[in-house]
Length: 66
Image (cartoon, rainbow, N blue to C red; front, side, top):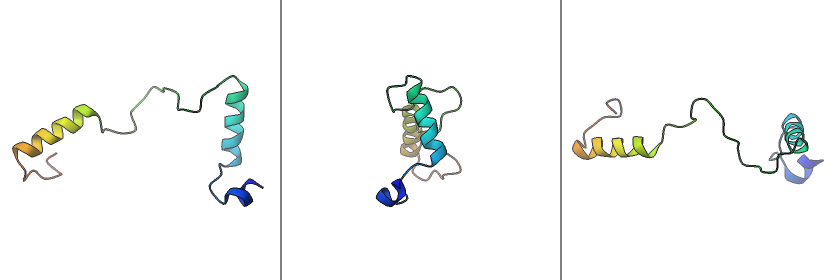
């Protein structure tokens, strides 16, 4: 029924059941909770600044060298 109303942009049933479970347990926000483990991206301010500095020193730096 939701797929008819929203096409394919609806969550899967297992995903909907998981959200239902966590909200029933008391969760009140939809933002991601903090998790331990590896970051999903290496684009930190420190890394961005370091790459900018390398490229500004030598604009012929290749991606492999970075």
